Amino acid sequence: MVAFLLAAVLLALFAIGAARDLRRLGNAVLLGLAVAAVAAGLLGELDRLPPGAARAAADALPAAAVLAVVAVAVLLVGNGLVMLRREGGRPVNLLPLLAGLAGLALIGLLWTAARIDSKPLHAAAAAALLVAGHLAFLLLCFLGYSALYGRLPPPRDVDFVLALGAGLDEGDRVPPLLAARLDLALALCRAQAEQGPPPVLVVSGGKGGDEQLSEAEAMARYAAEQGHPADAVLREDRSRNTEENLRFSDLLMREQRPEYRCTVVTSNFHVLRTALAARHAGVPGQVVGAPTAGWYWPGAVLREFGALLLAYPRTNAGAVLLLVLLGSTAGWRP
Image (cartoon, rainbow, N blue to C red; front, side, top):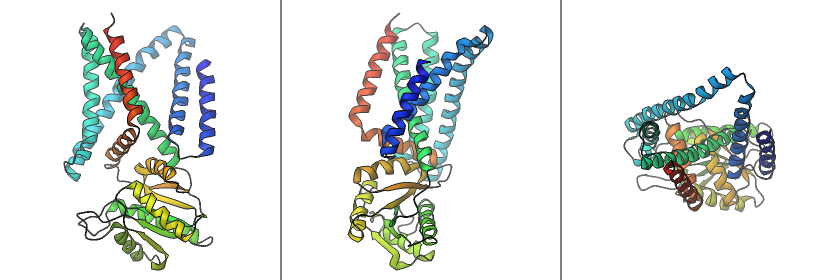
């Protein structure tokens, strides 16, 4: 009962935070804690089952958890190999492979520690389990809230639709990832135009060292090829990352309309981090995500999750250090 009451309180806090601003990382954590409290409450209810059923459930849950970890790890290893074949050996493309191998290594460490009477090994296993649990919880919070936020319908009465750049192929061509963003941005512009004044399309992206023109220029050309009026496009061609996309585009939009409202368009894996960055930059708008190829999505999500962890270095480093100390202490005890 206590766990369910705690879940209700956490859900109430989540609702308050979401009502204030959907673009808050705290919303994701509160929702995750509420779900965890409900799960804990349901586990507590196992005692109400008949003894045989309760024992079977208690035995099945750890086995199911191990199988789930192994399955996810194997899938990540497979996806990592696909990423390497399709995208090359850049460090960022190694993330699914490394995450999958880390999951298998954790299972191996726990299995070994359960069979060998060694205090250092038990301490290492306990510390690794706590850190892995912490990271897994945060990742599930990120995935869950990203999915929830990404399903919210975009507003239809905005002044601008801002499409974020994503690199060019062969120095001057819009790749499929960026084309999906532009297609969604253009669809939003057309949908609003059918009901009232059309929004202005803002294309944002500077020129990389290996690119022949700015991403904004390539995006504007793509929009023109799709029939979008050239005089209804604003180009932001100085930015080098998401934060600059938003900050520089905000300046352009405020020049046109100081009290503007906008919708920001990116890829579905990038929605939550973009929403957090938009809130930080003071951009008054929600974020929507374009679909991404299935084989590309896991690595992209891990990259986004890693970037969020690095955005709060002291908090996450402190949490990991504390968990390592707690796990090591608990594992060392007889």
